[in-house]
Length: 262
Image (cartoon, rainbow, N blue to C red; front, side, top):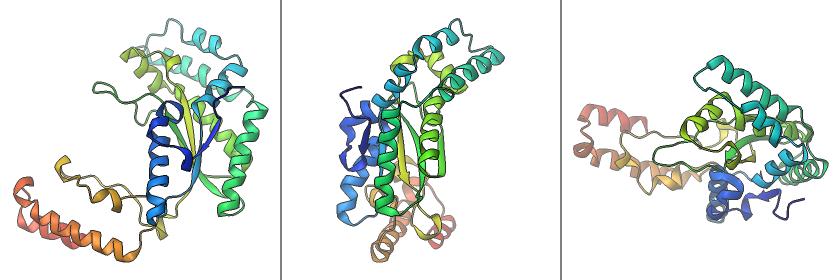
């Protein structure tokens, strides 16, 4: 077994762990450890690390089989790409989860159950270790699964996330950009699901990057914000939307509509 951990809970993860848990998990760890003490309810979870992925590939002796399946690939031949991608994903999906790794995943899920209740529903989210570059972005290339319940389902969906490192899109992108398939690894986030009907959570897309202000970092987070804090932030957002009129070129009637909808 690897000396590096297979499982890390969010409380033990920071940005320095990107090579081990990927960018998504590193950000979740930062949010959980930095915002939870301030009373912001970030759902807990854990990362199945890139070391676990490497161990899975090694124990099942998949490395050479994947290389052989991708040998001579022409990414511009869509049918060939689909065929080879399907072969690689099936190799991973049909492989056995090593018992020691499986037990660590089950144990971590049971810890979450102790915190939130039995048969907890979780999101199982891919977190690749490849960092975005000025001329390359790996966002959205791997899979995420929602409302996963139970130990067996969690273990199975971790394997599905491992397989999604070799979606047709991901294979083609790495080939065309000159990235080695075997220098990119996958970590998996297991995080408590949030009920959208009882939480202040979501994503905001601004009209301009200049509108991404510091105060938004505390209002657009997972979990429930205290109502007083939420009202205060909305008031500030309304004020700033008006003050940005000249720089954004938004006419007065549109701005009024935006503020009313806040």
